[in-house]
Structures are given as C-alpha cells and as structure tokens.
Length: 71
Image (cartoon, rainbow, N blue to C red; front, top):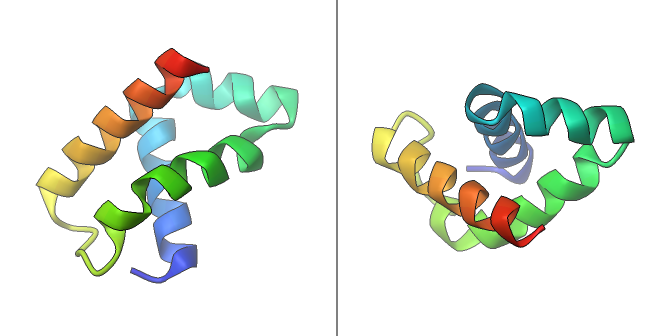
C-alpha cells in the first residue's frame, strides 16, 4: 500500500469503527496528527498488504483500540 492509500485506509477504519473518536479528533483539529500516529504504529502491518484483506482490517481495529486506550 502506498502511504496515501494507507493513510486513507486507516482514516476509513477509524471513521467506521470509532465514529465518536473520529468526530472528536476532527472537531479538535487533531485528526491528521492522531492518524499519523496510528499509521506509524500500523506501518509494519500495512506495508505490502492488500486493503481488501479482511484480516488486515481486524488488525488495524485492534491497533487503533490499543492506541486509544493509551491516549
């Protein structure tokens, strides 16, 4: 996955699975910052994988959930 596709993918997962958090980050003006942090954690997982892989989505959801517990 290219960086822009990976960013959009993580953004979509955050919006679909964590809508309240997505909206809060957006309203606070920190959405890009938080997505960049999440993407950095997801980078080894996402690199070279297909965005249609359903297991990838589950892994990204888990990473986001863990990240949000630490924030």
